[in-house]
Image (cartoon, rainbow, N blue to C red; front, side, top):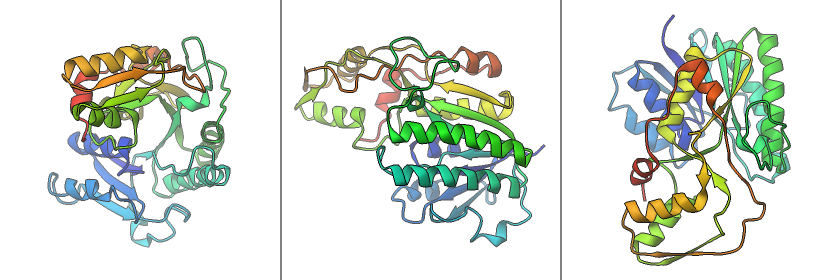
Length: 301
């Protein structure tokens, strides 16, 4: 069986890592991109690094059926379909409903491209607020429109994949960091402030958190596509969760940043991330390889 994959959302934070790692492993990749995305240059930069013909890109609006504007792709065969595309505000219900419908179109596209396996991307937000370690059997109680839509996409894509005769896997990503992480997220903004010697205002940072390098996440997704069990849901995280404050203090110490941190009140909502990833490790043999400090050093700030 050829090593080939479709990646939607291929220029995003998780998507660009997945695309890079697939290409490095010898895969042929179709990268599906939004025409107006400011991150598409990340994909363009890969064309110079890999042999001609290994990477193809498809520009298509998010609200259109994935293949409606791409008759040239008719007859092309791919093995795995990674669906990372998602957009809109976390509480924008209409946008989240559009994401849900687009996911069903993605399953149809996977069938049309003769893929064997559909790998959907979920989120820790599907579990909601937890005070105990989270396994794939934990109760799902999303409190945001984003989490509810991801959970609905999980169930509906499983049904439509079965109807299409596709193998199906759902990977719930917790919290990523590393290369390509954009400004506006906690760690890039924190590093930037502290590098300048400024003071950063944070919550109490008492909640448990789990950071996984985005490259390690890519390796986990590839492992699931190659060795994961069809019909299963998997947590994708480092698995060595600890108080968020410990991450912040490690970052300050190891990067020798001159700024200061002022800790405030508890975050609201108080979200703990305590993922258990034994199922992913046992089924695929995957292990995280990049330390938190190494990952933070690679952030583009």
